[in-house]
Amino acid sequence: MTDETVERQLQQKIAQLAAVREISRAIAEARDLDSTLDLITRRTTEVMGVQSCSIYLYNRSGDALVLAASTGLRATGIGQVMLPKGAGLTGWAAEHRETVTTTHAAADPRFFRVLGSGESKFASLMAMPLLARGTAIGAINVQTAEFHQFSADEIELFSFITDLAATALEKTKSVHAAVVQEIHHRVKNNLQTIAMLLRLQLAQDETQSPREILRESINRVLSIAAVHEILAHEHHTQVALKNLVSQVAHTVTQTMTLGERVSLTVSGEDFVVSSQAATHIALAVNELVQNSLEHGLRRTGGNIAVTIGHYENLLVLTVRDDGAGLPADFRVGESDGLGLELIRTLVEEDLGGEFRLAANGNGGAIATVRLPLAAISVDRRLTYV
Image (cartoon, rainbow, N blue to C red):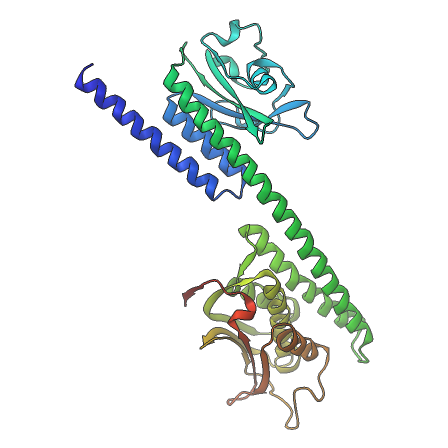
């Protein structure tokens, strides 16, 4: 064996180990099934020097394998191409829980051609079952464009990758189930919150028009929806606070200004908070900005500045406007409308914080919310702007 051959084999082993490490990391961090499967098929194709790697998973009824990811078959076939249970070399591997290797796939009596899949351009195939806790959940195969006899080393490497892929599928399935349960719980809680808000609105002895009441209710629902939107987008159970506050504040301003000249800014530090705390804070910000627009800037327009920061172990959020200001005899807690009552309940009772509303030194009003960092489950402070 020449030095060049040894060097080439060494480099190949190094590449294989790198691929296995990357796949292992993906499994450790696996939360999204599609991206995990895509990574496995891509890295397997690269490290094994094949032209295609495809993963098939059983459908819910278990009577067919569905193409879940592939590097060589047509992308339009993902989620569409189906193999009847036990059909084809890949289906046979899953059904019998055995490895299949063939140099001439089309000549094998078990071969099953799926029209339109793009599989006809491949000559050789190796397939293995994906087993999770002793149950076959699908199969994975690799294919080459030229006739190829798979070596013992290739079979061993592919077997190891297959085990990793099965582990990834099992983990993402568990994560998905936990996420679904969390979403159901979150939606249930927030629907109850919406129902409570509507009951409180109904019980208010105010002279608001039905249109104003409906608009306020819509803004409250949109504030809760903003939390769900961010959670869905980021695939987390926690929320970046500054983005949420900005989204809620701008939505309220756009809904309520009705052409009036109002400038809104959101600045300061960013925090990561729990989904439950995020819902409470979103509703509080909604009420604070809505209050500034209704009572401070309705006629004259002006500026609203929302600032997020911290002092010692407290998160400090302020909403400042330069509008008409507060009546001279105003006292928080003595003549609160529904909005201020909601803020006090959300901040003081639900989050154990403190709420203050006072006159701004240069006219207008300033509302200050102070929350214990521990109460909102802050994991890390993000960047300061």
